Image (cartoon, rainbow, N blue to C red; front, side, top):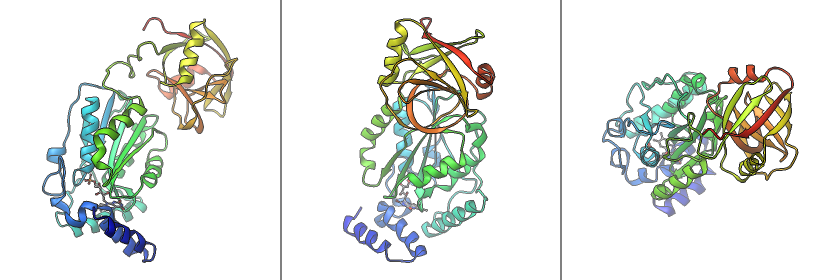
Length: 360
Ligand SMILES: Cc1cc2nc3c(=O)[nH]c(=O)nc-3n(C[C@H](O)[C@H](O)[C@H](O)COP(=O)(O)O)c2cc1C
């Protein structure tokens, strides 16, 4: 990217009308576009027709805990997807528009703008990629380029089409851009799939894409995602499994989070079982006092059914429906659906005993 030009354009952006600004943003954002329009852009996987699905394509991995869905026109997001795929050895699926984008760069830009306008009216462009079931996956990685500040339209369509199936799932967004931020597209994702739980996102711009090999692993580490096949929905991470037994005898296993709060809870349980009287709150959670304070690792979280949360340092919360708040993740009940958990916990108060799951 030619930095002086970029800076100049950035300055101009504050003084030009909105339509012109959008056009300039593309010129600015596609740093590579300034000198390498369209098919000449460098890409590890990009094809020559501006739609690199043949090479970017789908990959079957052996680690069934994760799946990567991505769209990419010139290969930058595909490069991020492939780096994640190599790190996790998981499935990777390209989201493909039903009608390929035009090879002519300006025509492509026009179409992208008109698709964004259509989406604002509730009309989503068709994509050919469909999935029937996300249940087996612990985290769903969703990758896309930023187009005019938005999530690229094929991925918006995919999320729109699969919103119900993605409800309650953990989603990690990743995106590439010339220089724009990811937050507007994060809001779009949250609005398209309101009942999903969103992890920390990753954006690489044209100036940071070169560090993809270091940025992706540290991001994955922060998410707790790794190549180990255990520790997902079926097999809790070794030594991090606990058991929750309800007063009616129903038992669940749960996998503790990787933080000092969960570690403190585990140490507490190692001293003996912990029984907590929990009450219902807000038709979304059971909450009760642990009896002592645990270290807090508060973060902004949107919960989904099965999340175990530390509230204000000394209360355990079991979520059976979504809520967004700043609190600490303690872990997650394994393989539980909202209806199943809601029914098991019942409507009012419930007594829950926590213990280490020594069977695992
Ligand atoms: C239609 C279109 C709109 C774009 N809008 C922006 C933008 O608003 N901000 C930005 O930083 N980059 C923008 N870009 C640049 C892309 O986000 C960037 O080049 C990205 O890395 C492309 O990813 P891909 O190679 O996976 O397609 C735009 C590119 C296109 C094609």
